Image 1 (cartoon, rainbow, N blue to C red):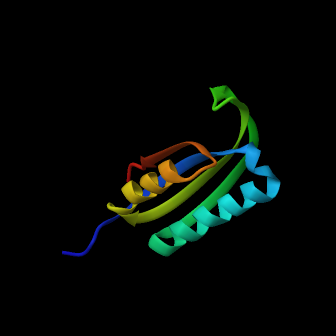
Image 2: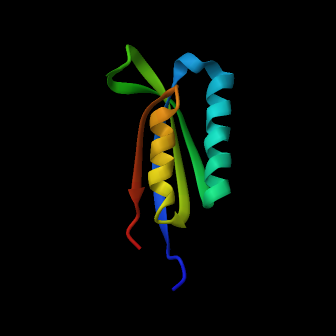
Length: 98
């Protein structure tokens, strides 16, 4: 049986403490990571937004939405990498309904 691929979207909030270059590098890092393990369908940079509540004493974050198609095991690995990456304030991965 072939590996079934599903569509996912992930929103990540990047710390503004990284500075503009650091944020751009972080976006590129995750673009590259997703492209390596999945098909990156789109990247939508929402940019700097106020957070609904303070996270790590920060009031703003840089929001990025990635849409990708991958096998079922990759999102868990992506989530693990988000959690151990300094500068990622929040992340969410959602499997889209097909």
